Length: 114
Image (tube, one colour):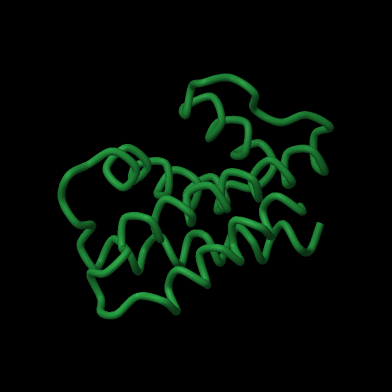
């Protein structure tokens, strides 16, 4: 949970430092993705005693789905943005930034409760 909190806090700092809606967007979404992944690991560790350790996003989502189907949807949404945000050359659109924020917030809320 500590790692999830660190990425969450870093995302909040980046969002506060942004000069406009497109400034630091990709960095912010990347931090949202990592916070969500870490929060999903918390859910799986608490609910199943294990978490996804491989490179397959599909396997990670499937494992989370066994604990919380809604959390799996949020993780899937975040993972769909991972490559675009972390390695892409275009700025993430504002609707996707909002989706990343909602998914991260949801996963963090669930992880805090377990």
